[in-house]
Length: 416
Image (cartoon, rainbow, N blue to C red; front, side, top):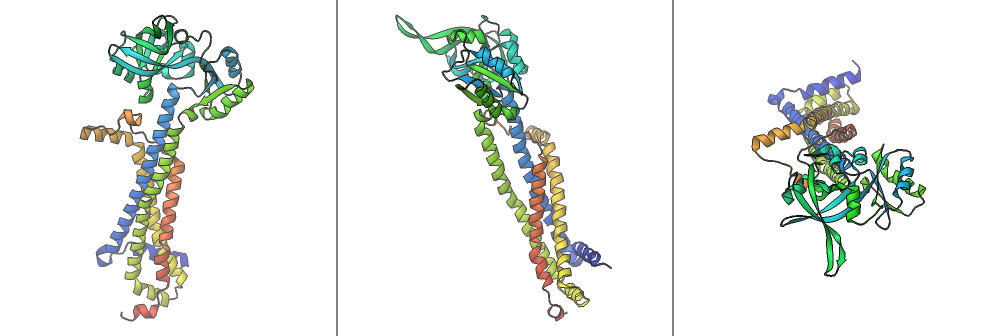
């Protein structure tokens, strides 16, 4: 019989040992279960972080532009020429003008600060997906001179207004009168609300017509800047920089990765920390494999001695017990990967079921920007987790296998 065959036969037989009421087999099963749970938890946690990042990115890109080109003085005078150059730039799908400034919105005794964005309804619908999230109205209701406004859902709730009600917009810049500086105010009719899915925007953004916003903030024909929609959002930093250079410079450029860099940086940092921390669970499972193999070696001392007397060398004994630890690690890692992927793909339904059962909501959208718990399985993460887990298990087999290989037949059989 080839050496590899009897090493495999003996190693797998020891794992199925029924001696002493199957205690060794039971400990091996516990080791597999511990490793499986560790790998599964690690995959689920990283999948949740991936899902949160993707969902956050999608919601951000639905309400904001991929990149913006703005004037250094706060306004862009010749924006039409800049827009023509932008539309000829490779990778740019749309370039739309906008006006954005801070204002106070008042309804009776309720006063709330918010960002007011002036948009061209027809062009805005081409640039971002916010038009599909408007409730109780549509973007085209914001006609020039109509003095209508669309509020974020949370902003409308805080002001206590609904569609058809009116709010007063107070611009921070005042007008000089004989009685002093008087802030510019204008009454707007609420034409609708939008729900972007992100509390930051639902609470702090209002949309008006581009011409109305320019009139309130006395911009004339100027606008704040031009917003770009790109084929590849991840190319936004380079594309908007190239556009500014093509226009001769003298512009302030920004993009979605810079405006929300803290969100994505914190997610990446959290993913790295969670990977290291939860990897300790896999490490504990690897220690269980060490304990399991040490117990097997202790119990099988006479068997090892007999194998040695029959001609098995230290290398064969080492391979026999290393094979056992490798099989435990492989089984636990594979089972953990399957369980982790299964839980991740059904996590949202499981969480909703648990919320209904307990009568609580785990995620507050005002804190986490969303009320669901999305999960997305990155197969590179799964491969990395499985690879590290299996490597730890393989390393854990070295000491017990080396100890078995050092068994001296005379010493082991002396008292048998």
